[in-house]
Image 1 (tube, protein in one colour):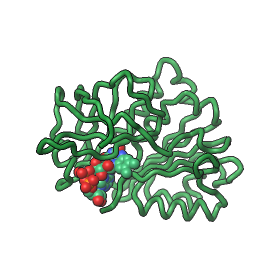
Image 2 (cartoon, helix red, strand yellow):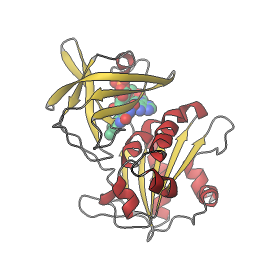
Image 3 (cartoon, helix red, strand yellow):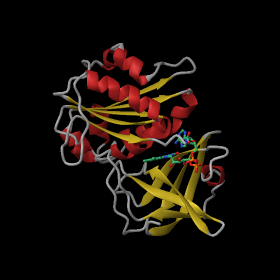
Length: 257
Ligand SMILES: Cc1cc2nc3c(=O)[nH]c(=O)nc-3n(C[C@H](O)[C@H](O)[C@H](O)COP(=O)(O)OP(=O)(O)OC[C@H]3O[C@@H](n4cnc5c(N)ncnc54)[C@H](O)[C@@H]3O)c2cc1C
């Protein structure tokens, strides 16, 4: 059992019948790096029921925010989806994770590729001013089934573009490419297909992946991670391992049981 804090829920928003976000207080002693996850949960029958969650908030904000799936028979989220302002949540004191921009070797463009709730860690990373100092271009690609599932990410990006301190640099360097697979939309199709065909690169005015220039962070389902890492290997990319910083890093958005 990790060491934990109790935090208070200060806001809850339901985005679709399967997605919601919530904000909590943040203990001033909780330190994390943008892109990390921690264990959060509630008490059930007197015992903590915890699951891994990425923070969507950044390490300089005085609250914590999370974006969650609602799994109808899921041990945690069948309950957590009913959480309300004022409720107490358990939050582990030991955030960790691999989606750290400085665990990549220096490059020119940073691609963050996420599907479903896999966008969560990138909403934290994109708020880090350091990435705009270290990359000429930051591309956030979010794949979902339906357009309504893009709303939370879109709101966070719009808010960041209007940030009074670094909105200008974000507007110049952050490209957002949302794509959906199950209904008509401006961009449609799986991320892997859009990259393999070259369509995504053409749409954003970039050249196809090049291991000397491009750095990639991936967060999604086991299937998404497999198809994208297979593709990256074909382009000649290798994964960061411990302190051997390479061209891409990955994190699972969830574990299939
Ligand atoms: C490193 C890491 C970070 C994570 N970050 C988040 C996050 O920010 N937001 C979040 O909602 N979940 C996240 N998860 C998943 C989360 O830990 C739980 O699995 C999820 O909250 C469901 O919990 P549960 O107890 O209701 O169901 P579980 O028993 O944990 O899961 C039941 C089944 O639901 C499916 N499932 C679980 N989570 C998801 C998901 N996010 N998207 C699609 N299908 C899913 C899987 O098939 C799983 O087998 C993360 C997981 C890992 C490993």
